[in-house]
Image 1 (cartoon, rainbow, N blue to C red):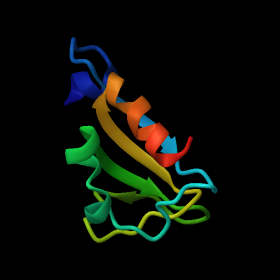
Image 2: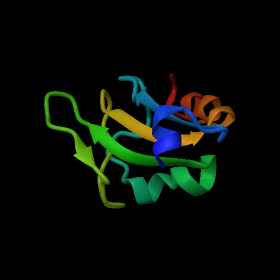
Image 3: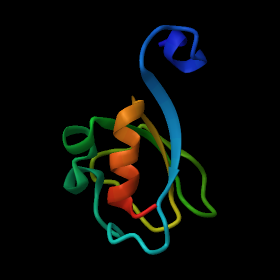
Image 4: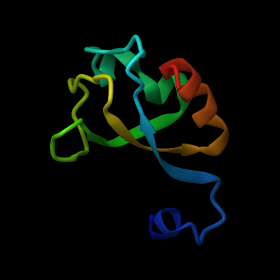
Length: 88
């Protein structure tokens, strides 16, 4: 995990912040409903809602809103597909 977080390992994983755009159609859907892990191979490890404190290890019932910043872990090639889905 340390190698992943610091980028010193050979793993093709990245930690990336992805902003949910205002125009995204996912507003109000939960992480469970979105199934980002199984659909895109990306894990949400935190959410920074607009104007609120960071939520680490959000539950599957956590709703995503426009403007939220998703803290994600995944393979680099998976992020483009997720960003397209979110409308970024």
